[in-house]
Length: 253
Image 1 (cartoon, one colour):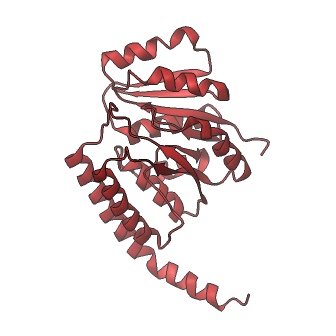
Image 2 (cartoon, rainbow, N blue to C red):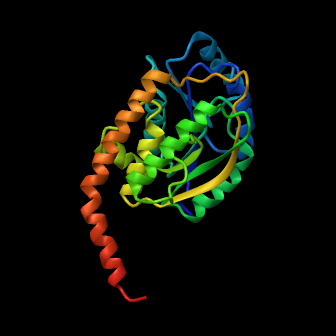
Image 3 (cartoon, one colour):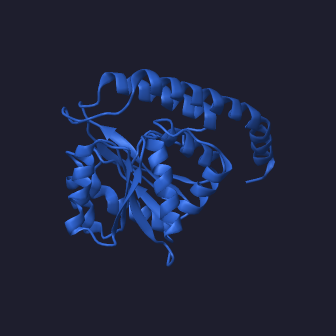
């Protein structure tokens, strides 16, 4: 599409050891980068400041004075990206888990289907902790229930291209979770609103020395509460979905 214009959004919280390598790997794609510092420690602020000598107008750092959560950082980045005139934003994590060499495939798919949310479909190796695998499978089950579909293959991968107009419209209409629940909730609610979903297989690794900010108790409670609300939303929508299915069956091929 001729008016497709994208940037990269990186939410960051205390990833001082990996951010420079991630930014260096991204520069080859020549997309403007917006980093949202979500109240990080001084070591991370120093690492971000060290990017300045090689930065230009193509790199912008936004600051949250206090930690809001990954979702809050992504929302700030999405709103800033649209305000700067971008139509799409590629979200990339700051911890180096994502296979950045897959970015051209994400860009191509987004340009072909600009109304779609293009997401990574993680292909894990043995580095994925068993507890994470179990948790992901539970989430996949509830997502299938909440969407009446198996088309939404993964809602937890933070490697995705957002269509900004659709996404920011949703953010204005509804209050979404600001922590680890955001990635799941925003995708499901965009799906409910008719946003097409595209998934690209991509390798994801869990480095042995990686730093995770997933809080087992707090984030699991938030995700459980979020799924409860989504199931209620599904039940409220189910009469309409049933009617749509019945009408579809009556239409001759």
